[in-house]
Structures are given as structure tokens and as C-alpha cells.
Length: 460
Picture (cartoon, rainbow, N blue to C red):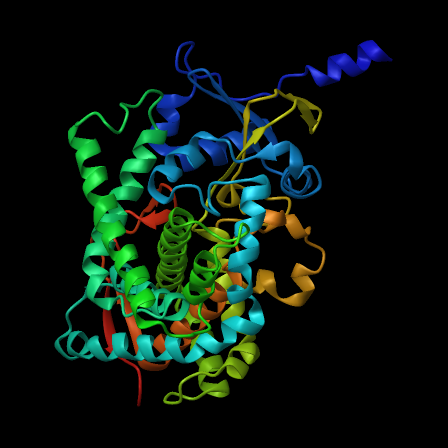
């Protein structure tokens, strides 16, 4: 019996062979999404890859997700290559830490992002969205297209700045959009290489990285310093974090941690929602029947002029299904990475200690066992009859387990409000050029933006 168990524990998972020296690095760099989807269909629910000396296992079954992210999560930490690179931008924060440090900081941040707290931000979301839609009127009148992905990025940045930090960040939108794109691209480029120059080496890429990070830091420190100078007792997230710092409590945040968490939430709190909305609008523009049904629901529940309330959002069932299906096809957080602290066995295959396991929502959401005809855009998948028999961890746009996205309630409410207000006012016509393609990086963005022409909807 012992020999049999040893054999099972050392069974190596199948996977694409790659080259002897660098493994699957070239395929990874060429088209990582296609590589992952094809490999899962060919080799099964546990697939072994090599990137040079690094062994990586893709886990593509809800049971495996539950094992790693929920039941045995203590054995899988964030001491990974991706976390190390992201920490160069955000420092030690909710995105990059594990264990006691992560738990302490999550407990400090979480109260402001609970569902009962998030509802207070509706007016911030509606007013910022209305201002953006008003700016689009000249484009609608003149028939000029705009980059909707860029517009949404600025909008969600403005909302998160005002809602969570009580700050008017609109004046920094251009700077932040450019600096964030630079940081995300350079960070992911470092993950695509086996060896990177240390950041202190003054290479062109490193200089661009430092300049972009400095531009972001200027914004973050301005927000923090302006709040400190106002001495206002507000209920937003930054006020809560500042009290934790200024009290000098051993359980509070240091000034460095305050910067890291403010930066993390400012950046991650708008990038993912903007990407999710952009993909949703692209899918609606290419599926007119679904778009018409969404508009009909919005008109029936709210009409074409009144701003949505928190109660309205709860009645927009089909709108929620549309967003859920868009998140299935194009989840902004398209991959989750963990390090195996001790060796493990998953799906009958050996997972070596110190190796990496990845769960990709993008790939898992295309598993034909749980998502028939997975490439089609079908919001009815999330109607109660179809969703009832589906495993809970077959769908994870916000992750799972203790590290599930802390801002999921905020992001979901924000996305629904923006989508509803946009549907009330405009129809968006997709431009034929440039083509819409996914750009996998730290998040799943649109490679060349989303160019659309707004058409006035009211009165139509």
C-alpha cells in the first residue's frame, strides 16, 4: 500500500512538451490565453508547464479551485513571481501579502467595502457617470467616435477617488491613465522574462517604470496630505485608515502601509471595473438582440430619464445576468497564482513543494463540462434554472476563498449603475477599426481600446 501511495504522489501531470531549455516560454509569450485553453482541452484539468526552471500547474476544475483557494489555502501562499513584481508597484499590500500581515490589513479596509457601506456611494457613481455622458453629447451630435475603454477608465478612477478617498482626482486622470498603463505593461513584461535587470539599473525600461511609479506616487501622497490638512471627520475609507495610522496603534498601519493600500485600492479599484464594462459594451454591440432586451428591462424598471437608485439595481435581473456573462468571457482578473508551501496531490498528480499553481478564470470559464458552447455570449446561463446545478467554483470573476476580491460589492454596484445610465442615454456603434482583441497582462485589457460612436437614445 505504501508503494502505491508513493507512486500516486510522484505521478507527473501531462502538458505541452515545449523546448528542453526554456520549456513553454515561447508559447506563453506568443499567446498565453490560447496556450492555456488549448492545453486544458488536450491534457485535462491538471496541466504541467515549464517556464525555464519554473514548474507551473494549471488547475482547471472547480474541485481543484476549492482545494487550493478554500479548504487547503494555508498551504498556498502569495510568495510568487507575479506578487513580487506587483509589489514593486504597490508594495506590501492586500494584493501581494499572505498570512497575518494580510489579515490585519484586510480587517482595517473591509468595513468601508461591506455591502451596507457601499450603498452610500450610489450618488457619487451616478453624478460622475452623468457628467461623462454629458461630455459625450458633442460626439453624438457630430458622429465622432471615442475610445470608450479610456473614458470608462477615467470614470471609474474618478468614482473610486471620490467614494473611497473623498478626493477630487479628475484632474489627475490623464496622468494616472498613462502611468498605470506603463506600469502594468512593464510589470507583465518582467513576468514574461526568465531574468530581469534589477530596477536600480538605469535601462530605458527601468527609467520608464520609475517615472510612472513616481507620477502615481505624487497623486497618492497628494490625496493623503490634503486629507490630513483638512482634519475632517468623514466616514470614507481613507479617513478610517488615517485614524488607524494617527492613533499610533500597534495594530494600525504605518505611513508606508497607508501609501501601499491607498495606491492598491485606487488603481485596482478602477482598472478592473473599467475593463469589465468595456468588454460588456463590446459584447452588447455585437449581440443586438441581447442589447435590446437589456434596454427594455431598464426602460421598464427605471425609464429613460431618472437616475437609478440602489433599490432599482436590485430589480434589474437581466442586466445583472448580462454583466455576469461578460465577466465569464472576459474576467479582468484572468489568472490567480499561488505557491505550494508543501508538496500536495491534486487530481492524482504530484504538486512539488515550492512550485507554482495557477487558476485561470478565463480558461475555467470555458470548461465545456460546466459551460456548454463556452465561446458564445448567453446571459441566460445565469438564469436560476441553468445556474442551479453548476458548481460554485466553476465561476470566479472575483476569486474565491479568504482572498476573494474585497471590492467585489463596490465593483458590481458601480458596473451596473454605469451600464444602466449608458443604456438610458446612448446606443454605441462599434467601429470596424482598430479590431477589438484581448491583451492579457496583470489584468485582461483591450489591446487597442474600444472605439465606438455614441448615438442619442432618448426619445428614440
